Length: 147
Image (cartoon, rainbow, N blue to C red):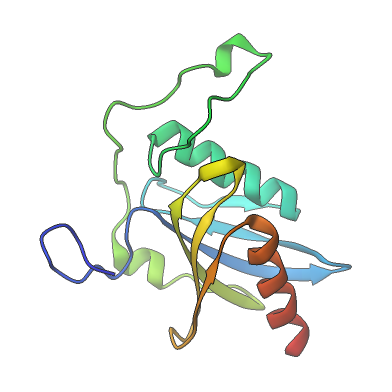
């Protein structure tokens, strides 16, 4: 991962660290860490994890979504910041570990209502490309079931 200035980035702004603390019946629970948050986002299901990460990226406008969402609650519309605000440094995020597994997910694009990017295991050895949330989940489920 390289920044625009050609300097290696340890944790790019379009990435999230997913710390999985519990896995049962093809569902996960844990925490989400990002440079865009002062604190972690706690999730109790796969669906909640995706919604919270999407909301966070929508709020910051990065990585940009390629579709306009419809909201039935007028208070949720257009809460995007003009310039994304970075709250956390790389070291704080990289210190976070899940009770079971830890993954870094770099989301390069959010086209066709799906995420496209790279998932990296905590050890940093294996990078796997994914084209949708389902591919991402299949990788996580397969990896967790290996133990």
